[in-house]
Amino acid sequence: MYKEISKEFLDKSNVSIGDIITITNPDMTYDGILLDRSEDSPDGFIVLKLDSGYNIGVCIEDATIKVIKKGIKPKISYDKLELSKKDDKIDISIISTGGTISSIIDYKTGAVHPAFSTSDLLKANPELLDMANYEVKALYNILSENMEPKHWVDLSKVIADEISLGSDGIVIAHGTDTMHYTSAALSFMIKSPVPIVITGAQKSSDRPSTDANLNLISSVQVAKSDICDVTLCMHESLNDDFCLVHRGTKVRKMHTSRRDTFRSINSNPIAKVRKNDLIINDYNYSKRNENELELNNKIETKVGYVKTFPGISSDFIDYHIDNMYKGILIEGTGLGHVPDYLVDSLKRAYDENIPVVMSSQCLYGRVNMNVYSTGRKLLESGVISSDDMIPEVAYVKLCWVLGQTNQLDEVRKLMRTNLAGEINKTTSVNNFLN
Picture 1 (spheres, rainbow, N blue to C red):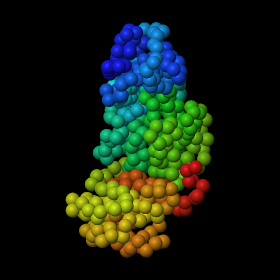
Picture 2 (cartoon, rainbow, N blue to C red; picture 1 turned 90 degrees about the horizontal axis):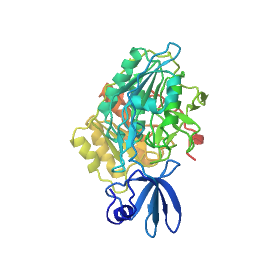
Picture 3 (tube, rainbow, N blue to C red; picture 1 turned 45 degrees about the vertical axis):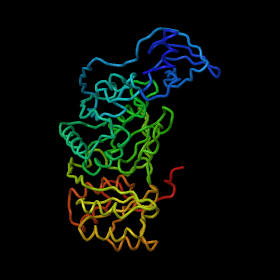
């Protein structure tokens, strides 16, 4: 989508998308493959894919350009993979829901679109074929911002079916933006005799700089292990060395683009893994075949999520009450606070049988509404503490709990009970993000 100045610059030198070029400007010389730009990009720049796999924008002012080799617009595709089963290997099910790990870049727009099949992922990562037998299934082909609670329900059914059919481990390819919501939902919905591992990528699988390869290989290694809680497996650092295995109810995406974006919150990772190396850090997890398969995926979708802020109006609470929401998750400040003028609305929610759960924007630490007067007023108004759950997990748990019961006392009891490793008895200062 080059236009005007950039298009004229390229046309004069007979340069096309996909050509390997050298461009020299007053600051630097670059070699790389010419990529297209998105439609809304500013004029006066071109984009190169460097040998490192990373893309760079280069200013063309006072620049010269030379074609090293004519090429074609980059694309990636694989023939359909025929999988054969071998008796000496464990059986792993890979379920794709879409996301960057299952995506390729559209060189026309510069955008990333879900396009790979699960079979393509295996063909792009042939090392996986030596590790296990695979049953591959593309459930969805959507980016994770489009995931809804109904997708969690469908996914849980497919996972349960795969386990019932004899799968020894489950790997789920998922977009990273809402991956921790899904990991929390599955943690409450399924008790499993085999590992369930969710993974993704920050760079699409057709890029040389992708993190998908290590994430997938490491996740299969976890799926072969005896770690049978729902876990999330992603890069430990910016390097391709180890991945961390996070508990599905104690993990959160913390950076928009870094490979090591996922961090365990108020908890240590269960393990670190790289291909054949699995190093356990925390042995407090369900072991293989310790649980019978149990699926309980009823969920209430009409649950509000309100983030408090200076000047927030009681209208935010009243809206959910007036529109018959079944529950409200508050992301409060500090130890779990909101402005005291919201207390009356929160008491109204309690009187109308709508549970309100308080979490903290701080992420680390524990909600404690006993310390300050506002907190004590909230407790008197029936507000339920989320203890040391992160807000997203508390929201997902409230949706799940309300799928089990609408009795306030029972909701309170379940929200305060550790069901899937989401609540620690104590919170250690050593778990704070450095």
